[in-house]
Image: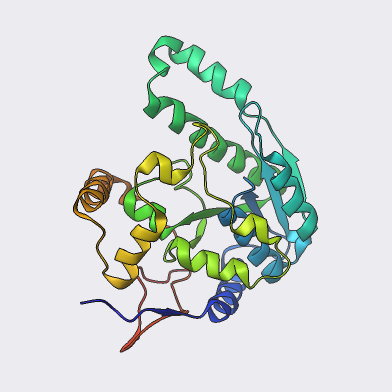
Length: 266
C-alpha cells in the first residue's frame, strides 16, 4: 500500500536550526566552530547554510579537500563566499599518494581502495582542522545514501553530528530550494563522487528518486532495479555500526501522523 507522504521543508529547516543551537549549547562552548567539508555538492551546501543560520558565519569553518584537480571546485568557493564563511583549502592528493606508497601501490589499484581511501583521508583532515580551530565535525550525508550503502565507513559516515541522517535526497533538495541564500544551481546539481567522473546514480545503477520513492512511499521500482537496490542495502548493513546524534525528520508527515526513521539524539 502506497503511503501518503508529505514534507514541510520550512518546518524541517526551523527544527534543524533549533537542534543545532541546542547541540552546541550542550556539547560545545560559546566559541566552538562547526567544521564542515565543502565539496560543492548539495548536501554540504545546504548543511553549511543551516549552520550559518543557527550559529552565524563566524562560527562555521569550511574545508575544501580536492584530491588533485577538482573540476567543480569553483562551486565550493561560490558557496563559501555566498554564506560569508572562512575556509581552508587542503589538497589531499600528496597524503593519499604517500599512503598508497606505504601500503604498496600495486595493491591499491582496486576500486574499493581508490574510492574509500580519499574519503577517509578527508575525515582525518577535518578532524585535524577541528583540533586546530576547536570545533565539531559535521556529517553531511543523507538517509538515501545511508540506506543503499553509498558511503565510506569511517570516511563520510563519520563526524560528531549528522544533520541529514533521517532525510532523503528528495527532502534535502526541498529544503535547499526554499533557502534563498543558496544559488539554485548548487542545490539541483547532480551528485557525483568527484573521483570516477560519473554521477552517484551512474555508479549505483539506480536513481535517488527510486530509492526515495521506496523509503518514503513504499513504491517499488522494476524487478531488476529492486534486486540491485536490495542487494546493495544488504551488503552494506555492516556500516550501521556508526550512529551519530542528529535531528529527526520533524517535517515529514503521513496521513496518520509523523514519522522519523531514526531517533533524535543529542
